[in-house]
Image 1 (spheres, rainbow, N blue to C red):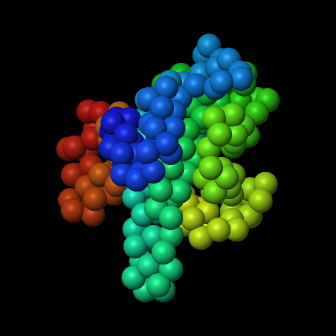
Image 2: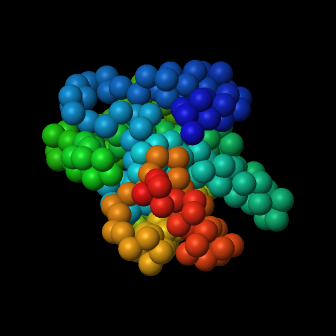
Length: 228
């Protein structure tokens, strides 16, 4: 999955000024006031975490696309079932940008093993994106939804419908992938007698789980033994 998937969703933002701000950041995700560390992971290939959910190449973009779609679907359900209309522009913008600067807080120690960059040892991704959104004069509701996306673990809990949707979508996608990732590693251990830190490029944990379900360890060995 490429950053083009993020830009495609960003183009659904109706407010032109907000749309342009979001697209500009996605196309060139750089800090205005700080220099990015030389040895950080690249945005296009970055994982979304060091050891848990989406902790593999391109995991950051995959997570961002998935949770944005989840947030939009939750918005639809909220309107259809509860009669509450969320500001979809805010939901899209905050979802697309919530983890944007994770990539500069990570460095790849060796394939599949990630640590913190020099900048990441001093500042977390939430502080970095919050400061950047203020610098670029994003709307307050977008900034709030980004700041609050960790829920009770955020500097402030969600206090708008949009912020709550972003938080719930982020947590849901992270937990689903986290469970699948560890299940896939257990299957690899069982079927291939190997311990892995990460998964091969372009192999998702769900593919491994489905292979085991459909054909047992034989299917796992047939499809993935040469890749792992």
